[in-house]
Image (cartoon, rainbow, N blue to C red; front, side, top):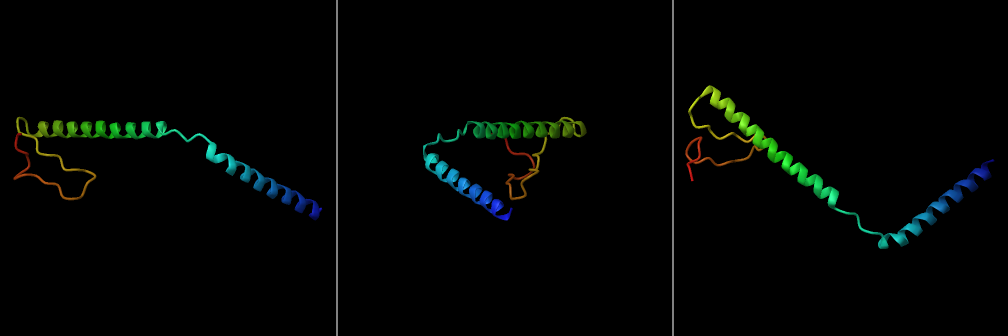
Length: 96
């Protein structure tokens, strides 16, 4: 029984090696994978972030206007950025 199992195992290992060798020879001639799904996902993720930040900023402005009607809304501090960010002489940027 043990010799039968060793023979089956040897056949499996040899055939596995043979299959690997065969596909290694065919692999350079295989068609390259397309980038279209990856690019589509990246574009969707980017625009989801843009829309999310626009909604967040609008909600911030509406909440500020409820508490301080008629005043200029100060800049919203970045939520996910802890580094330095420049504001010129106060909370509101000057008009262009």
